[in-house]
Length: 117
View 1 (spheres, helix red, strand yellow):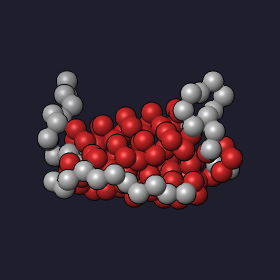
View 2 (spheres, helix red, strand yellow; view 1 turned 60 degrees about the horizontal axis):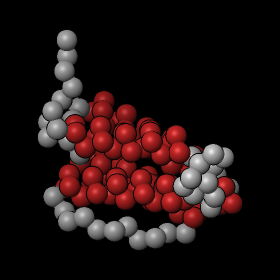
View 3 (tube, one colour; view 1 turned 180 degrees about the vertical axis):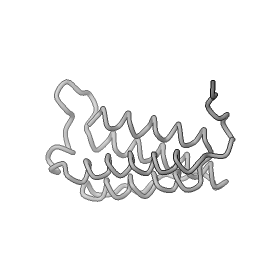
């Protein structure tokens, strides 16, 4: 039986490309949402979609900063129409530089966002 890699373990290319695919799919979904939809919560939801995207993007930015050994910084607040691009950029940073633990954490963040949208 194969065990998942430990945090800090090198990530394989399949995990990196899997994260890129899910990030791209969710970023495309964010880009396709009408701005009026981004600016309100989904039916039965508590959090406005744009706030959920911003929160997820910040979590990904923090994972990317940790992976690169940089200090964490707050992402600049973008207009609604730029949120999909911001999500894609920080998600791809994690895919490029993260170890196996960071890739798993990023995947969880992005799939959680997909459910929240």
